[in-house]
Length: 228
Ligand SMILES: *Cc1c(COP(=O)(O)O)cnc(C)c1O
Image 1 (cartoon, helix red, strand yellow):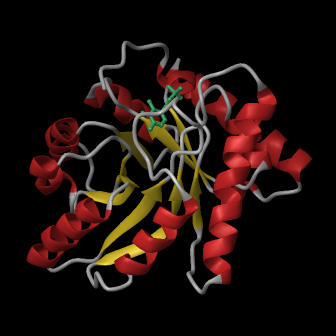
Image 2 (cartoon, protein in one colour):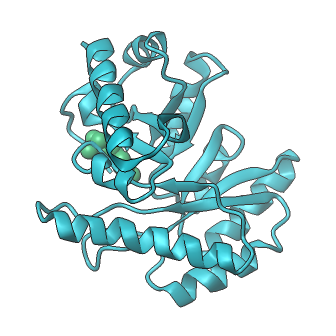
């Protein structure tokens, strides 16, 4: 089941890349394993998945030791200060930094462990729909500039969640906004390889708009009851 789902998702990514004139190699499929156990994750590994996404710090803390150390873990959920210690160093990439305060605390935790933590800044591109994320270009630029001084952080790009609507134009607009912000930051001298956008319902649009990391849960592991 999981193997078939992964093949189906990979085929859809490949087809979309052809249409969009992109190289599938430039897109990393992150299997969002929140709420599923180690067995399901092992099945996905057998199908060649190396990248997994978790949205709760305790789940990442509990699952990572049960699974091969080669896994690239992605932390994609809202991160509370008191749980930073479960994520820094375990996650290859933290997608959800949305305040300077959080960046400072993650930098401190990385410094203590003597590592450089890769991060993305999460941007709210969808009005009221999502709870978290940086709410304006001005704030994004200010945080990005400040992060330059945090030597134990490696700022790699931007992440967003599109609104949960059926209107394709609204979804695309959200992804385009993120892409434009990345381009503007790059014009200002930042080097940002990553754009994390696209989930089960909208990843094809995200590929059209330049995603390099797609975060897919339902299409791989089936419907689940998410507790955020
Ligand atoms: C759950 C989740 C996903 C995956 O969503 P699906 O619709 O199940 O593919 C992607 N990104 C974030 C931040 C999530 O919380």
